[in-house]
Every structure is written in structure tokens, then in C-alpha cells.
Amino acid sequence: MVHFLKLLHAKHQEVTTLEARVLSLRGQVFELEEAEEESKAKIMGLKRRSANLEVQLDRAKAEFRQQAKRFEEVEDDLTRDVLDAYDEGFKDALAQVACVHPGVDTTPFFASNLVENGKIVPRVLP
Image (cartoon, rainbow, N blue to C red; front, side):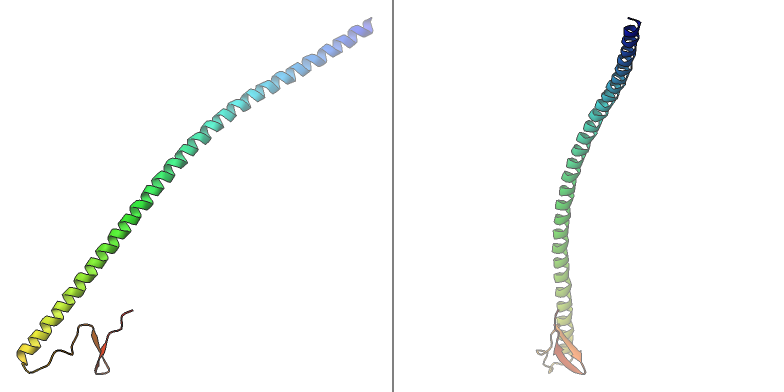
């Protein structure tokens, strides 16, 4: 009978040890579940932030495209204005030459021509 009591006591100790391990593991599981919930909340926050940043990026891209288009339009307008001013200045200069030298034929002269090697040649635009 003493042998059974010792065996029972040993089994009781083993159960107590296992219960302590189970309790410890349950604590770890609880901590991991809390960490999981925190991680899920962080992930959801990051997903929302990512979606917001994508929306902001799309808006910025659209705004950039609009600004680039406006820039091109303004650039075209300014280029035309400069060319028109250059052309008008050239016509005014030819009119002055014709005024001082009334017999000079100014019809072969254009603002788009160049002088190369002492000859008037048409400008080749790129």
C-alpha cells in the first residue's frame, strides 16, 4: 500500500508539474493572441494609410499632368509670341531698308533664312 501511495504522490506531482506547464502555455497563448490583435490592428491601420497614400499619389499625378499640359500650352503660346515678334521686327527692318533704298527688292528676304558662306539659304528646322 505504501508503494501505491508513493506512486499516487508521484503521479500527483507529475500532474501538478503538467498543470503548471499548461498554465504557463495558456499565459503565452493569451499574450500571443493579444500580440496578434495588436498586429491585426496595425496592419489595418497600415492598409488604410497605404490606400490614403495611393489616393494622394493619384491626385498628385493628375495634378502634375494638368500642370505639365498647362506648361506645354504656355510654352507654345510664348514660342508663337516670340516668333511673331521676331517676324514683325524683321519686317520692320526690311521696311526701313526699303524706305532708305526705294529701289531694293525685299521679296527674297525672309526671317527664316540664314546667311552661310556669303549666301542666303533657307533655315532647316529640326
